[in-house]
View (cartoon, one colour):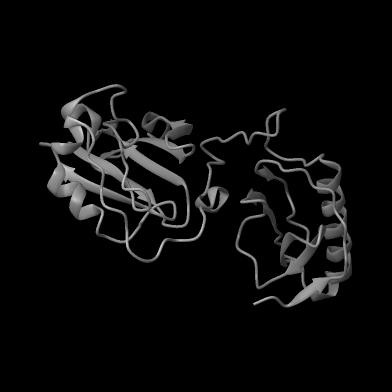
Length: 259
């Protein structure tokens, strides 16, 4: 629920990528920057999460600020917010970004699900699954069933799994809007048969996938990096973004780094 609108703050914010900056000394408020009648407005919302981010998704910017200061420093915080907005308007956002504006993800600063928000979640009747290749028809029963289940990834996709032997997992992505079927990340490029669907061949302790229905980010943990000292396995971690009908890797964190 919107709480307050800053009257007609006009901003010339270019369509950009995700940017990060430190706003730890700002009085905590969450505000959305959006366009209305050609004017960018700032709308304050409810309490903020633990992180401070500026992100762009589907044409809108979201500014999230957090602070440890109390109400007596509200004025100072408000001034700082306006300064940050001015920085955004000038296109000189500071933070962990590369020269072209692309975020520089690291193991200590990995991408988060809210950084890659999807559109609205699909509701209603899904399209019939399209099994066009022999590799797809091999798993007709599994894929047909998945097409009748609700979306669980990126708004209108269903991720489905099946077994492929010991310490192995296979998966596929079904577009519930079109019925198209796509291979999972880490599957062999230009493979055939089983090769198209193998997601991980080293499913040991700590392995697994993480994804949300309202995000295009998928995190895959797979691999054997066992530590005798810690008596546990540290799988490799892959960060993929679903972009233009394919998975694009944005970060890889070797499991051995955590040993």
